[in-house]
Length: 530
Image (cartoon, rainbow, N blue to C red; front, side, top):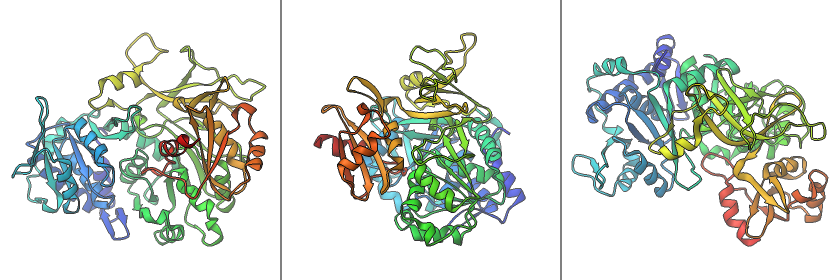
């Protein structure tokens, strides 16, 4: 197999009338998905004069038809970039400025937004011109004006020239400089990754996913492509239901959701409101999570109320397609005990290097119960091609394997600090940029957050560091706590130099569009008040 479109075509052959992707308003069967994707592909090919391996931005809501649009881009011989209709205009403009896409695919509902993003000039034919010597033009394509009579015979010629290292999509992540970086992911990346995901979690035609994450977030790659490969069904959960959690439970039962892959913040909603007191999820058999650290206390609530389900902690960046290590929960953890990241996925290898570039041994320090820490590196078929139009950042992150001086081998520096536990499993410490220097000690804020996991009455929390004031600020959502009581709880779990210097209670913890706690916003709002 060399092309992800074979996933759809094989499933359409086996299950032509089975729902592939759906929401409350309806969905597309595999037969419909393939037909519509081909029509869109031929139409895009015609409108873009048959270019190959160029970026095509897609500005649509998260709907079943948007998946057909993504696949249509791939059928046209190009790769797609998902634009969020709700993202700030400045971010969308930055992405488009980096891409110079040959087209933006949208619909009538988002045409005004598309035109707003192309204020530099749209001519009467729908072409958008950007000033500058090396700038290309892109076309705005309205799916509501799809020409279903476009010649599909060109698609065979497009496929005949395709290879497995051609790009499928580029997903833009936040850059440390504030400029988004577009990780370019190939067919080989997605195919290799999807085969592992399918095998590891037993995904088959009976799987019914409840999709939480946006399509522009790398986690969506896992449930979407494993659905398409295996003839499964993916239901798009309305975003609003994570604000009205009883509706969320009703949705999952109505559509008999048996597998979920959510960010921990979404799982915490169920635990925080103790929803299993009011509703059960009898069909749910697999609970997978990634994207941020999963606090153990709310996970234990899930396990106590849904004891027969599989629970798995997945870890990895967009640059490894989605995941590079995972851990299926197979033992009991205390509420303040961190979950491990586990081991590398099949056909993906990871290793840990210290500050001097030496490999960290799994040998355990008897005093701490862990190995030394170091930075996690990943290698293998999951590793993306690099960042689109950003050679400098690509060179910084995609590097020659430091352990292999003999032949070219690019690996990815994740920027994540990890260590081994006594089971030989990897344990997450923090991002390198979450490390602080406080009272002369190097501290990982993630370790302080882990200690908060067992404190009663706290539903969600995060630590930030005010550099100017040299203070650690603990921000939490939940029952109001006496600061003396909170400090005592931390004193029982962390050294003196890791105790928070200030406690802030918020009515609601802010989350970014991916569902993660918005730490940048917390720092902006609260560090300046310390």
